[in-house]
Every structure is written in C-alpha cells, then in structure tokens.
Amino acid sequence: MTLFWQVTRSYVTPVVAAFLGGYLFTWGLVSLLISGMVYLGGDFHNAETIGFLLAFPIFLFMFFWNFIRQTSWLPYVMTFVGGAIMTTLAYGLQTLVIQ
Image (cartoon, rainbow, N blue to C red; front, top):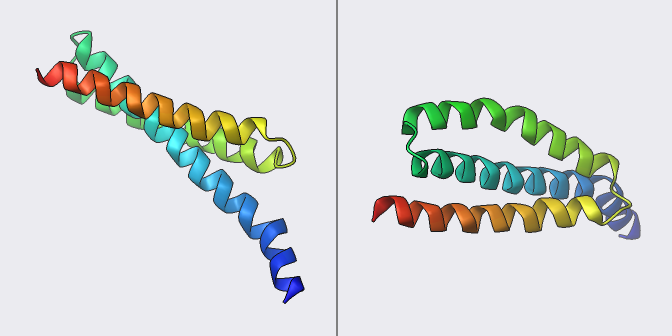
C-alpha cells in the first residue's frame, strides 16, 4: 500500500496539479481577454478567436512550468491563485458588459 501512495505522490499528483493549474490559468486569462476586449469595444468573435488561439500555447507553457518546477510552490500559487483572480475579474467585466 505504501508503494501505491509513493507512486501516486511522485508521478500522478504533479501531472494532475499541472493540468488543473494550467487549465485554470488559461481559462482565467482567456475569459479576461475576451471580456476585456468586448468591454473596450471590440467584436466578440474576434476576441474569442484571439483568445482561443492564445489558449493552447499558454496552457502548454503553464503545464510544463508546473510540471518541471514541482519542488517549488511558486508555480502552483501563480497558476491557481492567478487563474482564480483573473476568472473573478472577467466575471465582473462580463456583468458590466451585460448591463
């Protein structure tokens, strides 16, 4: 049983944390980009296209950064907290756009 937890902690947990952190950061950045561009008067479909084109390289960078630097806590904090903050800001901007 200890081998199972050792393998999980060594191999599975960093992959899951890097995947979730990268996804949250990418989601927050893309939603903030789209809502910010629409708030500033841009077209929604152009903003959506730009955001989705940037999403893949941003996700790859954040995933690999989290995965490579798994001994440090800074990448995890930046991806999870930064993604949550950007998602919250995007939600606020979207409510301003709708009103």
